[in-house]
Length: 82
Image (cartoon, rainbow, N blue to C red):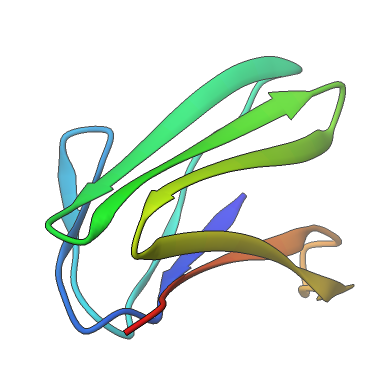
């Protein structure tokens, strides 16, 4: 999946930093969870059989775009409520 940081802060995803307005490809399996951390809060992106589910805590929100990217997958946008 492609994660894009649309927040004003740096995110931590799988031990790596993702700066504002940057994107990162994260390998996903049939069943897995990706935890996105920041000073604004935490998002948990769960993948189950190709479908994404989101748990948002704090002032950070993960959501899936309606359209598919050039690789045939939907992108995940991380944004803030501030």
